[in-house]
Structure formats: structure tokens, C-alpha cells
Image (cartoon, rainbow, N blue to C red):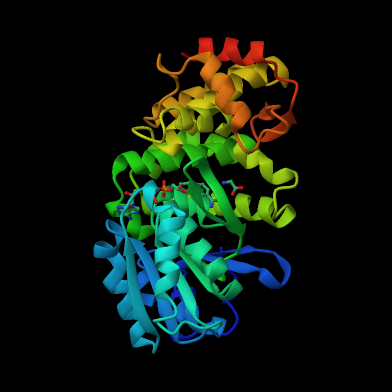
Length: 382
Ligand code: NAD
Ligand code: GLY
């Protein structure tokens, strides 16, 4: 819970803080530290949160064709009323927009809008918009101010925090990018009301992940209260988002550039990424693939990391109860999955490293998992 207002927060921000309507999670990264401001209906007050940051007046909001019509005007109005010169740039919704071509199209618009080093890029949308806009902000003039306003659950709990920005190449996902931290993340729970339910569940897979890898008490709370979170009950969804942000902030501040600890965030992603690659990112959402991946990783953890079978069963039960898939189905052949895992950019010299659970809330990185182990687990989880 917030105990003190952000430095220099203006009247709007202050009144929200005083009424307890917002909470703040700090991401401690030295002189690149920033806050995640969490609350309801924050978009109309967005300018109040930006003002203390001492940003330039020119601002570009990047959003997509689903989110811009819902929230673009409200955000731009708030910024304009505080004296920002705002332009809204919209990209097609969907992963295809995370491309060098789209990034270049956006970048080429910025000189005409007279953006300079003090100017601001604001990402308003899900992870696609956040990654793309972040890459634009990181590369224009070698880096200008960047603000994240995540509107999908996945973006709220994961992609908006931690500074991974980037685009895809035809050869693979996220192959071009930069670590580039935002100056602020504005997490407005109210935007989740318009998020399609399937997208909400997909983001919930990442919420489960945080409990599984680093907080057993949070995991137990999710087992009890997942329905309230998925119904977007105020206190429950806020608690879930806040706890995930706190856990991610801890990991990122300890290992910003993923030289070690940050890899635990990839729990469930080894199998998940392979599934996504095999279907070429069509018809399977990221969180759905991660959900299956976590079930497989839990089975491997029983075999190789000492996870109690009963805890693997609990993980699977929570995934299933929240409406996420637990099984691969028949379209993912073991040989193709193994091949895709070796090509994943997180593999080292073709050797796949798995994030496994020692117990709920504690992980171990393992390169002891054999192909035979993987084949067995993929068979069991089919
Ligand atoms: P997304 O951005 O495509 O959003 C999902 C869909 O929901 C889109 O159609 C979008 O238009 C729509 N949408 C978003 N918010 C909405 C709202 N409030 N109301 C109505 N519709 C809304 O996908 P995502 O799941 O948010 O993010 C996936 C992307 O995030 C992938 O590209 C992935 O690589 C990336 N990612 C990045 C990181 C990171 O650390 N940078 C971490 C995880 C995932
Ligand atoms: N989503 C994984 C990370 O931010 O490292």
C-alpha cells in the first residue's frame, strides 16, 4: 500500500493518493528506477502522474485499432488539458504489428511531429503495443522518455514492467530489441473491463506463474480466489496485479539484463514457446501455451527437481479451473517440439535449460533434463 506520494506529484495525483485509490510499486534500478501506479480509472488523470517527471511537452501516444477507439481520446484529452502537445498513432491490433516495418513507419513520423530528446512516447495497449512503442522510444534519438499504460492483463502483470522492448523478425519472435526501462507505468484496472475474456484468461496464466515460481502464499490465495480475480472484482484483481508487479520488480532489479535470476520468469515458456512457434503464433494465445508449458514443467519438476507430485497436481488444477488448457493435444509431435526448443533463443549451444520447481514458490534452473524426459512428459501431457 502506498505510504508516501511520489515526489512532486501534482494536485490530481495527490488527491488520488490521499483517498487511497492508488497504490504504487517501485522498480528499483538506480537512476532508472520508476513507479508502477495501480488504480481504477486513472487514464483521465494520466497527466497528473506524468507532470512530476519533468518531461517535454511533445508526446506521441501509440496504440492499436482495438484499444485506441476505447481509451485513446480519454488519454489524449487528459494530456492536452495539462498542456502536452499530443499525437495519437495507431497500429493494427495483433502480433503482426510487432515488426521492423511497423517500427520504421512509426519512427519516420516522429521528426515531422518535432519530437526531441525531452519528448515522450506513451504505449497504450497490450504487450504488442508496449514492446513496439518501447522499441521506438529506445531507438529514436538513441532513446527518449517512455511511459507504459498497459491495458491487457498480460501487459499489466508482465510485459509493461522490466524494460524488455522489441519486435519480431520473420525468423523468430523478439529477435530485435533493447532493454529500455519506462519512466512510469500507469496500471488502470478499469481498462480490463473491455478485454476479451479469452485474453484475460491468457494473462492469468502469467499470474499463476508468479505464484508458482516465487510466492507460495500468493499461489494459495489464487487457488482460493481465482474466480474473484477473473470476475475482475476490484480488490482481488488489484491484489493480483500488485503482487505480480512486486514480484517482477524484485526479479528485474536483481537481474535487469537476464544474466541469471530473471530466467525464472520463463517458467512454462520453454514448452510454451515451442508450441507457439509450431503453430506459427496462430490460434494459440501466449498464456494458453504457457499454461500447458507450466503443466509440463511441473511434471518435469517432479522427476528432476523434487517437486511433490501433489503440488504438480495443485498447479494443474488451478490452470484447469481458470479455464486454461493443461494438455498439448495431438498436433505437437515430440520430435518437432524438441527441435523448436533447441532453436529457442534461450537455449545455449542447442542445450535446452528448464526452469523447474523445487516446491511451489521456489525454482531451480536445470540443464539435466534429457530428451527422453521431455518426450515422456509431452506424452503424459498429451
Ligand atoms: P496484445 O497486445 O496483442 O493484446 C491482446 C489483444 O487484446 C489485442 O487484440 C489487443 O488489441 C486487445 N486489447 C488489449 N487491451 C485491451 C482492452 N483493455 N480492451 C479491449 N481489447 C484490448 O497481446 P498481449 O497478450 O497483451 O501481449 C502479447 C505480447 O507481449 C507478445 O508480443 C509478447 O511477446 C509480448 N510480451 C512481452 C514481454 C516483455 O517483457 N516485454 C513479456 C511477455 C510478453
Ligand atoms: N517476460 C519475461 C521477462 O520480462 O523477463
